[in-house]
Length: 236
Image (cartoon, rainbow, N blue to C red; front, side):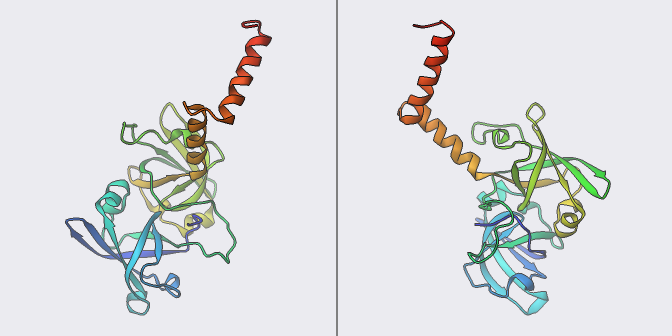
């Protein structure tokens, strides 16, 4: 589990592809390797990856992670190049304050930056989701103004959502701009998106309750509908 509060920016120094995916080596990472162990989880641009090797002394501290083809297909990590910076966050410790929102670092899809506009010292960024497919339904039902979204692993508050254009926006204050990679990405670049998992659980629970299985929620909804119809004189 993660919070979406980026701890550090690392730099990709090596990429090795194989038939099943690729291995990334990320340097300049010493501050987040002080308590690292092989097998630990680190979110890289919002994707939860397993540390397979690390060294806290060479090249400013480096670690390796392996990405399966599924991860490369779901995220922007397959487009990273040597020299690119990436957002890094260690898995949340039980002893720390929870400052962001519940982030699994299981990326749902990518979105495209379609507009960047300064607003005083802040920066407004607009994104567009891809057209939905049967394999990947729309994520728009989980995006609401003032709700949460993780973009490249960063917990951000949605400022606008437009279902008709499949777009949504956020605003970055100066502090956030200095701590993450998002402001450096140009219009047209892809970002990793993870919607709030609470919305997913609520939707599944409601579908299950209102489906053929019945249950107390279905009975309650049916009673409410029946009362409304009676009040309107449509049934007796």
